[in-house]
Length: 105
Image (cartoon, rainbow, N blue to C red):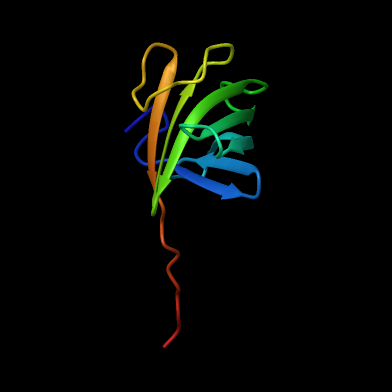
């Protein structure tokens, strides 16, 4: 559980992302830029909606199967070097949801 409640949902579409709460409220929205050639792989989150709107947050990420993990720093701070949140950083782990087909009988 975090500041958005239990299990906020993150949706990616192209170079955009959207974070919603269980009741459908949008809490963060923005764009991202990835650089998979860096070690660890780098991503910049550019928030358009939410507490960090207008900021670019440097981060690192790893995608292993259906598990996505990132560690981001506050704007103006150095990009994290490890997947452990320190002061001014946040660590998030997300599990991909498999879309369920709804059929009629």
